[in-house]
Amino acid sequence: MSTLADPARRLLDDLPPAGSRHNWSRSAVSIVDGRIVTGGPDGHVTAHHPDATPVDGWTGPGDSAAGERYAVSLAAAADRLVVGQRGPDGRVAVLSPATGAVRWRHETSADVGTASRESLLFQPYVVDVAVAGDTTVVAARRYERDGDERTWSSVVLGIDPDGTVRWRYHARASPISLAADDGRVAVAYNRCSADHVHGLVVLDTDSGTLLANWDPGTEGDRRVGDVAVLDGGIAVASHGDKHGYLLDHDGGERWRVDLASERSVDGETVYAYPTHVAAVDGTAVFVTGNTFAASTRDPDARHPREHTVVAVDGGDVAWTHEVGGFARGLAVDGSLLAVPSAQHFRERSADTHAVHLLDSARGHLDSQPIPGIASAAALGDGTLAVVEEPVEYHDEGVTRGAHRLHVWRD
Image 1 (cartoon, rainbow, N blue to C red):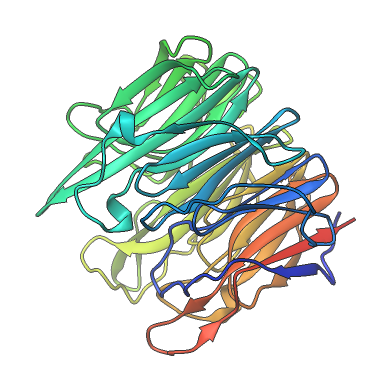
Image 2: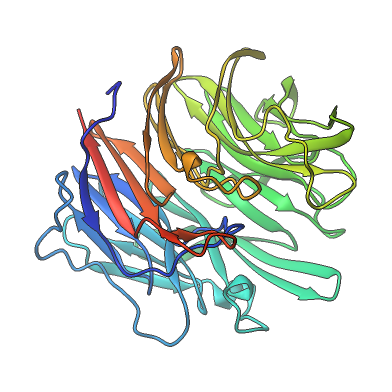
């Protein structure tokens, strides 16, 4: 796959439009056994054929329980599909990829507590899930705020095939992503507290035992934006100093690259957070987010590396590509990388709504516009699947796009 044209499309569940600054997930997509699985409102999960039509008889669950909830985290293997929710219970479930039948459920609210307010932002949130051998790995968090004081309660779980929780790792911090293989689970924490000052922890997959930790060592609670496992190392997108790192398995630094640290642009000191990293055919590929400023909430200047894909090979920048809008995730298959680009909340231009296809060695291959905002992407089986969400900018009052699945095939 090197070009994108004429996708199959399918409308999904009703979903209210996102706003100008809305950058949290309400959808998810994964590819398993030749099928495309989407998650969305009410915790609903649906399987689709490559032509985007629903799979008859596939019984992916929704939730009729009271309260706003979304299926926002998906991970697939040949023998299971893992679904994580944001909602009152912070539910995680394992389904049969073939039928959608539920094998087991677990409510992470039992581990992180229940919401202190009705707002979705305070509900338990399964931020990421992964499959590592026989172990299902889950990271969940819950947020509280009292005035200017923010606190987080979080847990990483290692769960057996029958749904039994084998181990737990608790932290007063905010996990944002994890990466797992047969031996290690690397967990990224984007906000930390005085009780937990490590932006990265590495746990044993079988026991949950702490193997290593690492931190950028910067002031404030910002720490790590994402983590990926490469052969022989761990790639880290640092929120603390806006750099990308490759570490060894013990947390030792192999290389460090400036991605979007503070610089003066037109008299303003601005920076951008590295929000994602992926291992793409042995190359560490980072993506940066929105411009922020040291002295104002609404800077006129833009950081030259905002919303940019940066490929780093052996500590050297191999290529870059601007995607224009905020990326909520990445999709990887072999040497290919897909970046769903949503809104640029400062510029508020629909020109940023797109999906970008890139290659680890060649860089940018193709881009296709999306009417709404591209919120999630999956690659696999010669297929690229993207979920679109509607958006309404506050200074336009016009709804753009819909909750829709787009599918490209080789």
